Image 1: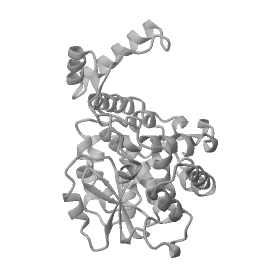
Image 2 (image 1 turned 90 degrees about the vertical axis):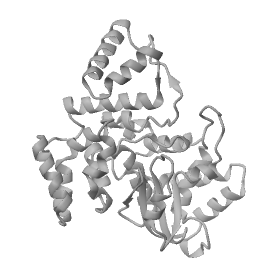
Image 3 (image 1 turned 30 degrees about the vertical axis):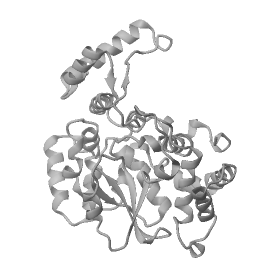
Image 4 (image 1 turned 90 degrees about the horizontal axis):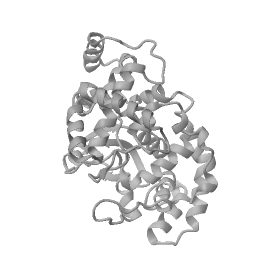
Length: 351
């Protein structure tokens, strides 16, 4: 639908020589539908497949949680999505430990003792410059951790400064993909993609929700009485252009209106953020929590992930969405399935 506004994928983040990208956020599924692990004979010859399978088996045998995956596959000849994600995390963690990450390892702490000392210092110092430097020095250690199925759930316990020091997601993302990739969305969306999205949206069958978003996207903040501001409205229009696909056992299709609720939620100023986190009863992929007097007057954004609220660097809605996108890679978490089309478009076309 947006082919006319999509640049060559040779400029995309997917082709930025990063193994983390292709293995981290491409796994958007949340269901337990099974998949069969059978490489296509048209893509690899049989000898290569046998060698690759043996290498994977050897890695899994040596890593925590690997035997469980091998047992499951031996029994069913297939893996559930959740089991497959665990396997990917194990393999990526192995690759990181063996070959490193795409960035230079210069100034990285290399021993467990050094990393633990830096982590202890970060938990107690109030010097933001020291915290950011130690976070930079422990980047390799942290990436191995988020890709480890056993240790990934402890990331905010080990690195709690994500929860009170702004800019750490941006720093890790830049270390992963480089300073030239990181600013692409904020550079390209306002100047090229935004207007194209508005033009495409006008051609859709109009509903009241779509009309409201179009109106808000084309209005100034002063003109808005209710609804999201013009920048976040332009992002939300993408969900109408790329609505959720039916999935899961019931194959029910979620409306764009409900899918938007998976991307951003609003609470009024004075409402407890902790209370919002306590009210979460099910597992959800990262989303934005907007705090303000009304949707068009937000003074603070948070990224909610695993019942934690990470403060965004800026109250600007576009910058906060950019940070939300990057959080998927920094924490090696999958896209929400109902937003996968939107995220994949941004991943391949904009970044």
